[in-house]
Image (cartoon, rainbow, N blue to C red; front, side):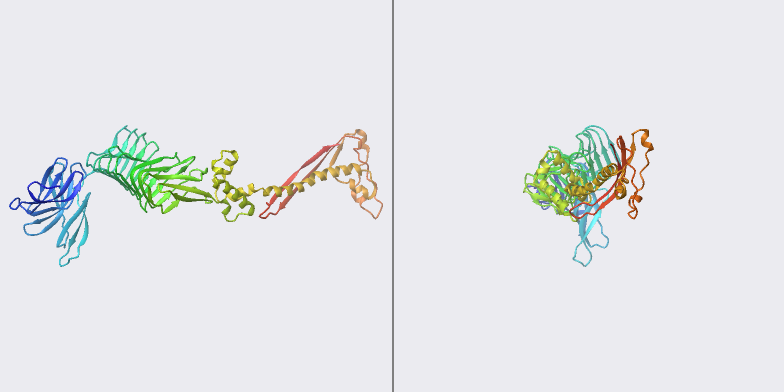
Length: 555
């Protein structure tokens, strides 16, 4: 129970940390008014009474922190002796000194303040002659005075915090905080403190952190950017943390290390993950993790591993799961998230940047884990020939059966390398692996064989039909160019006549002179060249070939 000593009745309207705000009625005949506002400290057991000057009734609706340790704001309504109802905020500083801020809305007949946070108050009002309430939001300067940073803070000191608060201190960062010292912290919160980031906080020191949460019922609200290297944590909680609330509506680019402490809640409506090409990391959180439809959880697949989110507690899933692939060496399945207390819901959208379009991805939920399963679909790509599709189907079978991802052989490694290809590059490689080029090459080789046969046959005819007269003399014409080493007597022999005479059948063809190289060593050579184009289809490759060279010999 919470009863003020000597009061006829006591009502509690708000609790903040160890403080309770409300009202109480005096025993008839006591006090100056029917109702008084009070602030009760549960730790010290002390009561403080607050009456608006000149009021006969003072009513405190609720309480919230005013940004600094020991300072509080309470929305209040009070009635003066003339029966007028007033609304506003009671600000109490660390010394217990009250300051009243009245809210006046032009044209309103009645104003009530109902709740406050920071320097903002919400409530309702009525206009003359109307019973329909209207809502309002008012900003009141001076009632909220947190630790603020609007510029650039840089710290390389070890084991120190750039922005740090004590119990009840709120910290608001709208600037830039950069810490690089080992164990350095960008923002450090304590019991009841609310940390708000709309700027940028970076940490790069070993065992450092962008945000470090401690104490009871601390809160971190992120609308800006947290970014850390692999040596630091983006958000971390201490062993003394309990009832911590983390809300992300911005970007958290770094590791979560918040298993310490009890009864924590993490709500992600922004982007959460790790960017860059560094090694894979493991996020750890203890409590309830909630991702809303507006949130994105990004877990990378890196060479040989993947990012993982381990939750000691419950995961309530929605929104987007992003799985960037930073490697072309693929596995059949990746376990991305596990929650000891189970998972509910499911991701509404899956994106896999970097994964080839001919590999499909699907999520599998086990009740406590979320895994990403891959299926190779090379053979299903549009526009493939029968041979390309057959090769793709064989690779698909090897991958989907687990043989390729798990076989440590050069052949498996070569085939796994196909997954580094884009969809536009894949058909040409499948064609090369199909073997259809070998069939077409046989046709080319058979055709090219004529050059060698022709040179040798021409040379044989030169020797066999040299000196023949008539039509037979034509067989000795042409062929390789020959040079004899028979000696000076060979030069005295007449050169062969042309074939035109041998082909003149109307008259007796003259005899062709005998081969001058008979009985001697002869070196001969013949040039050749050609161009070939063979059309292909879905079963055989087209070929374009050019060839040229010299065939030579010695007799």
